[in-house]
Length: 114
Image (cartoon, rainbow, N blue to C red; front, side, top):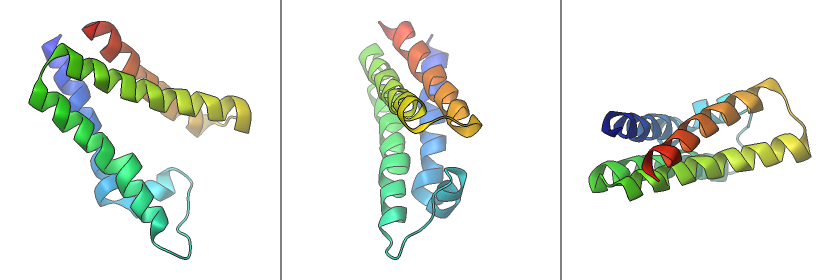
């Protein structure tokens, strides 16, 4: 169980690094574009980047089941937002892929640490 928790935390950090350090790449991967200001890049760096880095680092630092449980809840929160978009905004393949990844990290992290 410990190794799986560590893998989920490292996955959070790794994926977060893309948003934090490569916002233009992340914007493209999410089918988003830069606007007239740099707020788009700023939001990606914060919400799709450093937030996930912080979650993963925090879980590794604390190393408790509760920390990894919270990591799972965060990933499930992202999955819930994605599912809401699929239902209300319409679905396409990329959204489903992201939903599966988010739920695929979140649900096992919760179940392993309850």
